[in-house]
Amino acid sequence: MANDSNNIAKISLREQPYGQTVDGEYVKEFILKNNNGIEVRFITYGGTITSIMAPDKNGNCENIVLGFASLQEYENNPGARPYFGALIGRYANRIAGKFTIADKEYSLSLNEPPNCLHGGMNGFDRKVWKAEVVRNTDQIAEVRLTLESPDGDQGFPGNLLARVTYSLNNNNEFSIHYQATTDKTTVVNLTNHSYFNLSGEGKGTVESHLLKLFCSAYTPVDQYMIPTGEVASVIGTPMDFNKPTLIGVHLRDSFEQLHKAKGFDHNWVVDGKPGKSVRPAAELYDPISGRKVDVFTTTPGMQVYTGNGLDGSLIGSSGKVYRQGDGIAFEPQYFPDSPNQNNFPSTVLNPNELYDEKTVYYFSVIS
Image 1 (cartoon, one colour):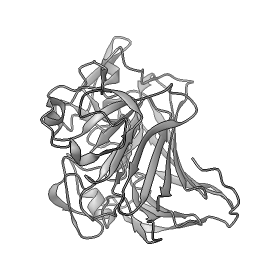
Image 2 (cartoon, rainbow, N blue to C red; image 1 turned 135 degrees about the horizontal axis):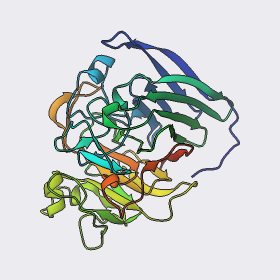
Image 3 (cartoon, rainbow, N blue to C red; image 1 turned 180 degrees about the vertical axis):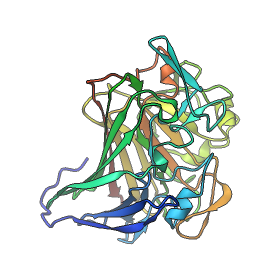
């Protein structure tokens, strides 16, 4: 990541109304913009990132994430929704319907039967978060989003307080800091579900993007997209992105795992030790525009998803139809179904403990 602090002009931070939900809740939009043309827009509905503007090698700025044009469109996608740019909780990815803590079984909201996907039918992506500006200085702009999730929400135990801080600096680093506390032992796994297209939103497929993953292993899934419990090497499989590889090279491979998911929709194990410091997880580069994004995280895993459910039925913010492969989502996370997999990193959060994870996106251009 960059470490240039010479540019001292103040980062722009604006707040404005975005609309009202069908239930009458007011939604705000925040706009963070640094001195290099990076602009991040997000709304308090779902903590949703609606746009990230970034310059290409010729200085032309375009939105590089998928999304909708209005609040109503974000609300009007129940069930198997795309989760464009949303904060995901209480549990990112899939849990096989239920789990047990201290001999007590908890049954969850099954929005992808037999699974609970991304927190259930009414997950964090469908909540209006409270927002406050934390800092707005020469070098950084920060906004903290807060959500209270009551005991029993979507079947999860404990009153959970989630805090997510979005920050942008003049080094072209956009950071997401996740924190949570609980009053009863529970499970937590938070992430963001932004889909990237470095050619520009609505400009077709990312199959010609080069992807590198700092991941030597992944967790294979069964027919229900639940991990089998195995942690498998990527070597010699289409899951190997240890060297920059065109996304489209293996996207339609006959490999059984890709057939089950209809593309890439798997949890990779991020190399290195999880902890307080972020470490590299992914690099995505578009040779045509010259745009590049590096993903760093503290989490043990990262789901990579090639938008396999995008079937031409959704229209994006540019008015273009979205199809499979028109964006790629990086979801830094703990492993799917960890509450039911004893050999996976634990997602249990106890009272008096702090869930504390961070992801950083570093934007750059290669001429």
